[in-house]
Amino acid sequence: MWNPLKRLRTVLAATVGVALLSTAMAAGPAQAATTLGSGYWHTSGRQILDSANQPVRIAGVNWFGFETSNYVAHGLWSRDYKSMIDQMKSLGYNTIRLPYSDDIFKNTMPQSINYSGGMNADLSGLNSLQVMDKIVDYAGAVGLKVILDRHRPDSSGQSALWYTSAVPESTWISDMKALATRYLNNPAVIGIDLHNEPHDPACWGCGDVTTDWRLAAERGGNAVLSVNPNLLIFVEGVQTFNGQSDWWGGNLAGVAQYPVVLNVANRVVYSPHDYATSVAQQSWFTDPTFPNNMPGIWDTYWGYIFKQNIAPVWLGEFGTTLTATTDQTWLKTLVTYLRPTSQYGGDTFSWTFWSWNPDSGDTGGILKDDWQTVDTVKDGYLASIKAPGFGGGTTTGGDSTPPAVPTGLSVTGTTSSSVSLSWAPSTDNVAVTGYQVFRNGTQVGSPTGTTFTDTGLTPGTAYSYQVLAFDAAANFSAKSTAVSATTASATASGCSASWHIDSSWGGGFNVTVTVTNTSTTKTTAGWSVGWTWSGGQSVASMWNAVSAVSGSNETATNEPYNGALAPGAATSFGFQATGGSATPALSCTAS
View 1 (tube, rainbow, N blue to C red):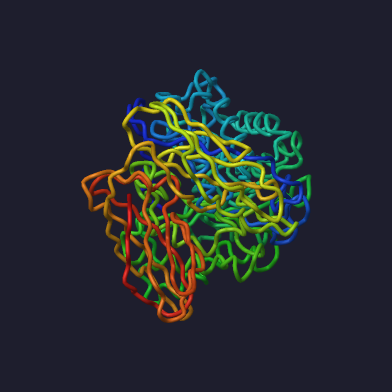
View 2: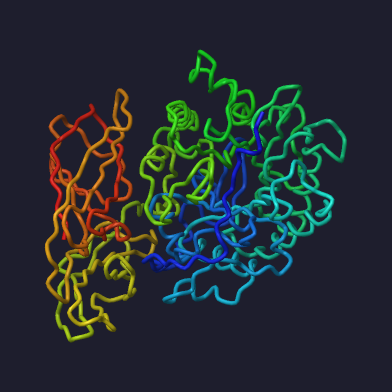
C-alpha cells in the first residue's frame, strides 16, 4: 500500500530570477503525411495505431506543473519552453504527458515564468490555458504528441476519487469536454488521462456509482468522445481489487471481468503506474525471489491486458531516484518487461517516465537540478525502449537518416559587431530545406540558404558556431557538429574523460562517460572524446553526444546544448554498445 506522504511534489518558489542560456531550435517544415505517428491515433487489440494504421509506441516523459499552484509546467523559470521541448525530442522522447488540475479553468495566471532576455516572450500575458496551447502547438510542430492528464481536482493535492466536495463530477466532466473541444482539430493532442491514481475507497466493478472508478471512466470517456471522437481515452487502475493491493492507480486486475466499454470503439488504453523503493516500500521488493518475481506481479495487475490482446497498456508513470541497488534492479527488470523496441517494434507496452522535472521529491527527473543537464544514467536505462522515432522523423517513405553534416563552415567577413558565415550545402535522399545556426550553443538563426550574418556581437569576445541541417520529410536536424568559427581567438582548453560501465549482459553493455573541463577558461567551441575499440564492439545508440565512426575508432562530440563548460565543470553522455564489455583509453579535446 502506498504511503501518500512519500509522494512529494516540490513546488518551487513563485519567482525565480535565474535564467539559463537556452534558446528554442527551429521547428522546421511540417511533417510529411506519411510520417510515422501522424494524425489521430486509435487502437487495435493490444496495439496503438496511427492514422495510417502503423503501430506506434508512446515513449515519453511527464512534464508536471500545471496541476500545482504555479499553474504552468515547471522549469520555465530557467528555460524557454521551446528549448525544453526541443531537448526532449533530441533525446528521443516522442510524447509529453502534461498533468493539470481543474483550477486552470478559472482563468488562472501562470507563476514563475522567466521573461528576461526574450525568454518565453510569447507567453507573456497569457493565462494558464493559453500557455498550454503554446506548449501543445510547439510540441506538435516539432513532431511530438501530448497526453493531457487530469492529475488533481485542484492544486492542493491528489484525490482518491475523481471528484471532491469542492470539485464535483459535473465539473470534472465539463472541464474535460472543454479541453477536448479546445483541441478538436489539433492531432498533437492524442488523448486524455481521465484521472490520476484513483485509490481506496475507489473500487473497480463494485457497482456503487459514487466509488466505482470503472463506471466513472465510462461516463467521463463517453463525455470526452461526444465532443472529440478522435481522442484516446487513458484509464488508470485503482489501488485494491478483490483484496489485493498495488500502487495507487496501478491495479487493473478487474479489467478482465469488468472492461471499460465506450460508445466509440478502439479508444481505450489502460494505464497503470509503478514505482520503486524511493517512492514507497512494497512487499515484493523484499521477497527472496526479487527481481524474478516482478514479471509475475506485473502480469497479475496489468500486463495480462496486453499479453491477452485485450487492449494497449501505457505505463503512464514510473520512476526512481536510482539511489538504492534495489531500485536499479527494478528499473532494469521493468525495461526488459516493457519489450525492447529493436526486437518488438511497435508491438510493445507504451510508457511515459516520471518525470522530466528534477523537482519531484521522491524520484528526481531526467533533468538534473539546473534544469539543463541530463541525468544520463536514467536516460540510458530507457534507451532500449524508446520508440522508432516518429518525433525524430522516421517515415514510411524510406527517409530514416538525417541529412549530411554541413561542412566547410567558415568566416567570410567580420566587423566589430558581426560575423558572416558560409558552409557547403548538405545532401539527403529528400530535399534539404533549411539549416539551424547556433552561437555558443544557442540558436541564432534558421536560414534556408548556406550563408548567415550574425549581428549584435560584443567586440573582442570569442564566439563559436555550429550549423545543423534538416530535411522536408524527416523534420529533424543532423545530430552532428560542423567546424567551429570565432570572431576572436579562443584560448584552447583541456578536458578529461572518465569511463564507467553501468551495466552489462551477454550481448552488450551500457556506459556513462563524464567529460570535465580541466582548464581555467570556459569551453566555447565544444568538446570531443575519442577511443579505439579492440574487440569488435560498436555503439548501438548514444545520448547527449553525437557518434562518429571510422573503422574501430569512435568519436563522441557534444550536442549544441552541452558543449559549453565552465572551468572545472563536467557533463556526461552515455551509450549502449554491442559486444563484450571494454574500458579503452580515452582522448579528450576541448576549446
